[in-house]
Image (cartoon, rainbow, N blue to C red; front, top):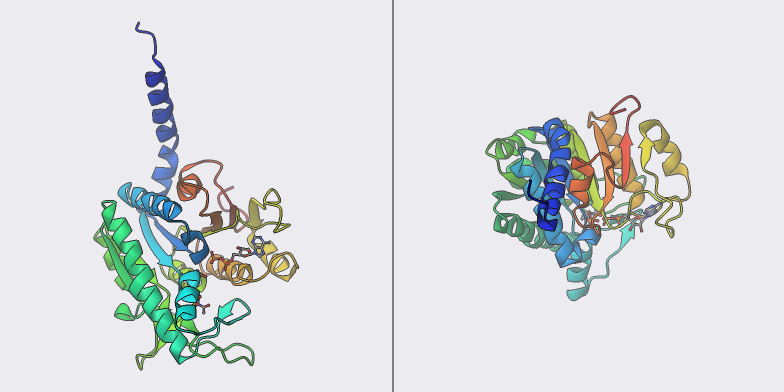
Amino acid sequence: MRGETKMMKDAIKEAEILSQALPYIQEYSDKIIVVKYGGNAMKNEELKQNVMTDIVLLSEIGIKVVLVHGGGPAINHMLQKVGIEPKFVDGLRYTDKDTMEVVQMVLAGQTNKELVSILNGKGATAVGLSGMDAKLIKAKKYEANGKDLGFVGEVEQIHAKSILDVLAHGYIPVIASVGVDDEGQAYNINADIAASSIAQALNAENMILVSDVPGILEDPKDERSLYSNIYFDQIDELIASDFISGGMIPKVECIKTALDGGVKKSCIIDGRIPHSILIEILSQQGIGTLFKKRGIYE
Ligand SMILES: Nc1ncnc2c1ncn2[C@@H]1O[C@H](COP(=O)(O)OP(=O)(O)O)[C@@H](O)[C@H]1O
Ligand SMILES: CC(=O)N[C@@H](CCC(=O)OP(=O)(O)O)C(=O)O
């Protein structure tokens, strides 16, 4: 028999890695995964390309991927350009009329089209939508306890059929987190909350929140203090603890709502690690922090 060359050994190793993904490809085949891609993990162009490549790959192997995106840093950048100082209350952006115009312009006009164009450039057929299209995200003014956040919206209803129709054609829906009420007023919706509502409406198998941290850290300064698994019944305690803060609080809250609303599992993964989505979906070990109910996937 011919001796194995190094090239052949490498090829066998690659084929083994591919074949190890088979059970996961089968598990997720035809199932819906909602990926929320956040602003902080979008800052690096190369990583953005990697994240989009992963999404195209998952779609090509028959997984129905819905991409919901934020773009907080891009909104901040544009606000500063037009002389508006960004203001946040409990992780949500105070959104007056002028700010709302910028939010809509950046999320629906700029970020959404950029992501669609990258996906299409990689061979997918991505369809860019905002929550205003087909009343996809019906919203109303967010009622914060006594605080007026302007045009910040909360989700009233998701028009799931429009998203399912896009998926049925084999297209990738790319959704900007802007909602609309019956009078046509646009609302600014936190993208994690939009993703959670969409994942529930679609009965998603997994909701993946791609951020710029390894997951939930016990000590936010120490990346080794990662929680790999958190059970649904531990989430309240986590929120009440003093080691999660800022944007992480609404993130964890909407994971709780998603699991309660029928989403099978959810995870926070690090968009700075190349191909973190593939590692999460197609490998035994996964990556980041996985949230699930007890008894599921054990
Ligand atoms: N315990 C914690 N573990 C990890 N990150 C945390 C924790 N507490 C607060 N954070 C902060 O939450 C941020 C993620 O939330 P956010 O900035 O809203 O993300 P994104 O823009 O990706 O949606 C992290 O960058 C981190 O600074
Ligand atoms: C109400 C509210 O805060 N809306 C967010 C919407 C975008 C978002 O959520 O973007 P990230 O995912 O990048 O944080 C905002 O204006 O920044």
